[in-house]
Amino acid sequence: MSASQLKIRRLTTDRATVSLRGDHDSYSATRVERGVRALLDEGYDVEIDLRRATFVDSVTIGALIEAHRYARERDRRLTVTIGESTGWAVRRLFELTQLDSLLTVLAEG
Image (spheres, rainbow, N blue to C red):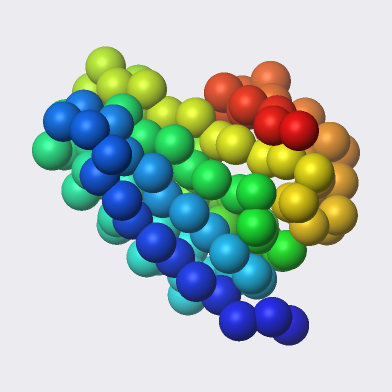
């Protein structure tokens, strides 16, 4: 497994990015969920950047779905970005589970 990295950046007064790099499991899922909730509570729209994620487990996917629900309840926008550099396992998971029908997924590249 490659090392996981989570980076939170506030880009503007109402937009933030949570970038996941490497492999993400239940440990980082908790960090993702807390970070996203905090940003949404502060009034930010949030982009989850998975362009450099190589693996996400079901707990991480659950955290993304919960974050999406939480954003909707607060009338905020949550998007997920994937791209050519996103790990095959992540892209395949999104394809097989049709997460783009539930989450707002932006394909880049």
